[in-house]
Image (cartoon, rainbow, N blue to C red):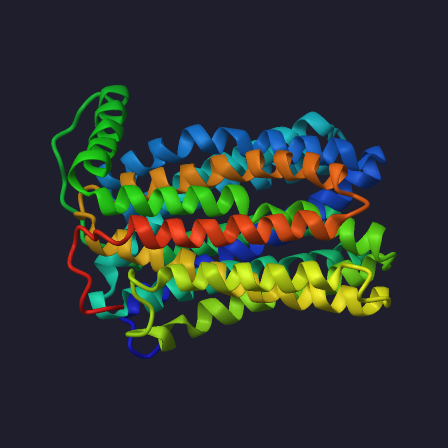
Length: 415
């Protein structure tokens, strides 16, 4: 972190504090809902419904991030988040909490995050020099992964020993502290002529779309890659893993927790070490990372056949394979984000990044539903499904090679 300037470091610290608070709160609320209702289905429904608005709000957040002072936007959103959580704490102390209140809070937090993340992503290129862009994206991605890894652990421990009220209060404090840290950041900002909000948002989203479609086809191709990977490759880990580990292999819940932790660690390791790949990963060889995922899927398929008789060995093969695939997908995702930030004009970067986030967010639930049906259909021969995913990943890698063959911007020097 020594090579980064003070303002980027302050933003990272603010991210660490706020994301940690959010991660602890999300996990604690999931346990609280289960205790309150005894139904995992209710929690799953609330979580799914709270994500849907993100698809529509992210582009709006991108437009706002390009129009307004990014520092003030982040500070304001963190203060609003802290205030909402504090208000929920008051409801908790009055013992009037309902599932509806929790659903409203989770939806509000998701909507705020959809406005907040484009501001963060569009701030990175103006806070760090171009040669540090890849590494800085790795740092931000690593911060998110570490929060998602440690947050549930801390949330589980706190929930066991202290009340949900204390956790909610601590989470609110985290967001207020993050806002204080962000007040000291200086992010270059060029004020633009004021416009009516609705007209501004509509025109800005249209401007971002026109830029992607007509002016920079490379970014369009990159967003297509993000969508396809999120739709066809990533869902295996959200839907297939729980079924294989708990049902097919008969492993206890703790083993599934070990696998999730291993995947989180692989993402963290990928994000924190991506700076070492500078000069080695290029647009022209990006497909090789996806091709490697195909090879791992083939190995995973072989490991789930009758050739391996031990469920524990099958479990280990699936776990290690999942860690390798997520390592590669994290590299691909960070690299694509970096190239998009690098090649998008500063006045458009918030909108463009928000459109990319929307594409990925839209693909995930569709892919999860699709794989849910496929896992049920191939439940007795799961290796066939995994082999099919490997074939599909192989085709995607060849497609990525083809669509990036005629590169619009100059590729060298590589990141």
